[in-house]
Image 1 (spheres, rainbow, N blue to C red):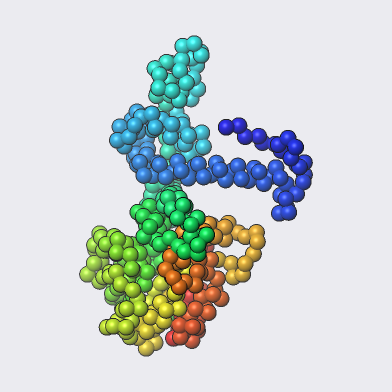
Image 2: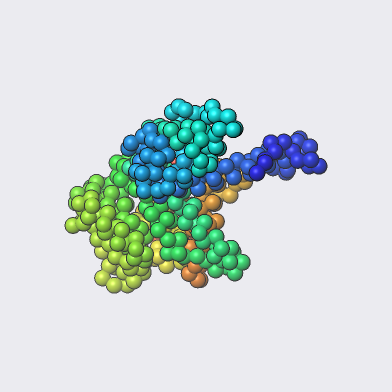
Length: 399
């Protein structure tokens, strides 16, 4: 495929605007750059799922033959992936970098022959730089971004159903997105929950921190894989946490995570709807109810917030953590706003619309929207807590 870096014949001049402040050529370049980025995400997914990055981080530099042997994969595919990653700057290459053989006595690097060029390709060694390894393999680093590729892959598998949902007004439930999306969500949240939630973020809200320090009973609604519940239990020894999520697979994963971190004696999980809990023995039982990054996914957030309010003891409050989107719509928007709308297009909005009737919030839940839901649910006040975070905003809802 040949891509021109200049305007196509017969196209408007380079200086012609598109109505967005960009020339046609500039906008074409932006779309082309997006194609390159999409290809890198696809390659990142392969490297993550096949264990290529982990193997390189642990034993690099490696040849394609060594990487294939270490990961139980085919050498030819490993070689193509390594060359792509080197060309894109994800990996560095140790000599030989170029092939010296003539056309008459060598095969292409990409071929399967045994000529000199192919031998050079097989002898190259590839290194994953330590800084790149942190971003791609360190599951506890706040810089860990590999799970983004899993989410894109999980959503990509459902694009046909999502197209249908756009036409009909239906949806695609989170359960349909499969292991990639579920694991991506858990893996992206894990570093922040384990390394920052209770070390920096919640202590920034003195009233919440004091309740937890004193030893509280906590409900974690929409707990997913349970990392938030695990983090709170680890940081506050006097706290007990009950996590709730309708996704049974996620609940089983949460139970394993709690056991693995030694807090299963104070953390329990159940695949139950919060509304059912509030109608039973759970009413009036919790000092704090948390909802981490889930309210915007709910088809009926008012009903869930009402249930959360009824779970609270006298004097209790609800803490909602959700994306720090702009307070009002702006176009063009920030990188964060672009990311959030991207999530919403193929993930959060289709999930929220999969159960009708639905308010169809989507990922971009602005502060006024949440405050409106909270008021309808019977809360008397919604305030933004003084917690500084680039991606999330923390709210306190008071009955």
